[in-house]
Image (cartoon, rainbow, N blue to C red; front, side, top):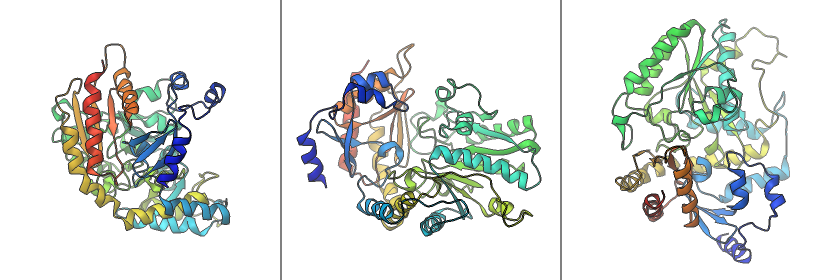
Length: 455
């Protein structure tokens, strides 16, 4: 495959891939400065392993596993073949009142690797869909339990839970919220980035219990009898690899249990090995009531998400006194458990388990940590933090120009053969688990050269 891609790139070294200005303007790109992109297209035409191939014939190291989703590497043959078979044999099947075998097979495979009693998997079409599904599930759970007044939702600053209505509302990244105004009334915990934890290697030491204890005040404000759920990421990637200090997540769980509030983990990004453990729940020893999934569920090869519910949550729906034709949870998507996505998911789960992807991430993580922290002391760098195969480097911004410096760094890295994600005042790293140490070296060498060179 690599030789074929290389031949394709050599045959067409046009950075626009032959697209006209009209064609470039026809696609309104998400989370993108469209005007700049149309003037300076950065087009990807192929992928294999840990690399992308650009339209102008270059090999580009993928330092973020796509968008934190292709952790097992690009171009996985078994996933591609599974999707092709499904497209031929069963291109679509409804999941409303009818089903197809692959949906149940994938649900069972996912449940088998999840921690605790998260035994029931509800398929969505994305991480954003998983956020809205999980929050609706939490509210519906309390209605099924005879406590319909428990509606209040609590998130956290700097959190990212997708871009649908509920997810945007409970998310805590200001830039993602300001354009749209209030959508749903929610409350927020403070974020967990503390100055005393700067340049932490792994889980930060300080402030975890005190930060978590602020949940007591928020619950008291609403009264526990009105609070449905608390939603947090074990680690927030899009917010800038925001890590939970020691004891933080366990304390949140204790408070939720004390006040009869559901705890939801958003593991869309952290799930399936990113932190060097199967899930953040495993790493931190905390069992949520509901867990959100996506990204690694199909290794990014198909659009799919999921929400895993504990026995307690699932049983509350199934034990309602309803006639057999009634729907226990009035929610779902046309493309829930789409056959092609299920095929991709089954193949991806086989790779996750069979090739021990979480263990592979755990083995590479210490080397990745050391190389990233070797950048400390370079011009512009004010903080470096990491956990598993995730890291962020704070580079600040010139006064009055938020986002400028990280954008400059990312654009220069692209020229040097590195795809680099940036957000706010930081750049983010999440390499594929199949990366070699030499590739981590190259990644950090490019950053060491580029970061100090921008203004």
